[in-house]
Picture 1 (cartoon, helix red, strand yellow):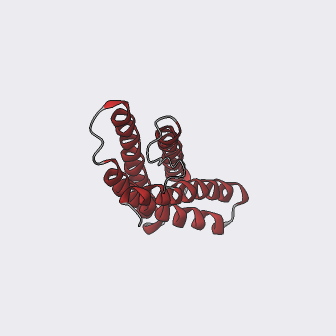
Picture 2 (cartoon, helix red, strand yellow):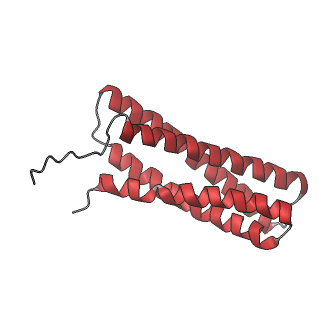
Picture 3 (cartoon, helix red, strand yellow):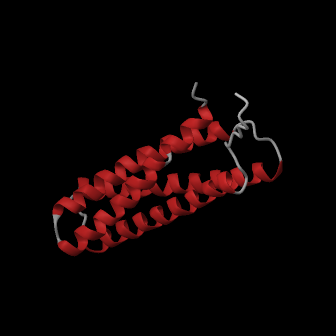
Length: 149
């Protein structure tokens, strides 16, 4: 049976992939001047933000029960990074939705939106780094099996 702590690692790959791909799609659209890439970047941003919401919710659930020690501290650092990423994604998405809604995604406002998107992507990478440390340095979620089922 799948434990709730297994859901978080399955979901985190969606915001990572969607937000990074969305940012690169936006940048590509900037250079090749194709609306397709800009629109794809917008939709990937929205989907990635929804994925980040799911990742943060399941991450908090997975971290419940860790009470003390270096693992607790590492989990808190990862959770704080994830929360920052979620806020950046929400702000970036809201800003972009407003710009699209009012047809103002151009010029200086477009540059601000891209800088926010870059900050979100960098925050995703930072959060992923700390999540990787939880697994590879602290063995969080790792179940050792020595052939005894």
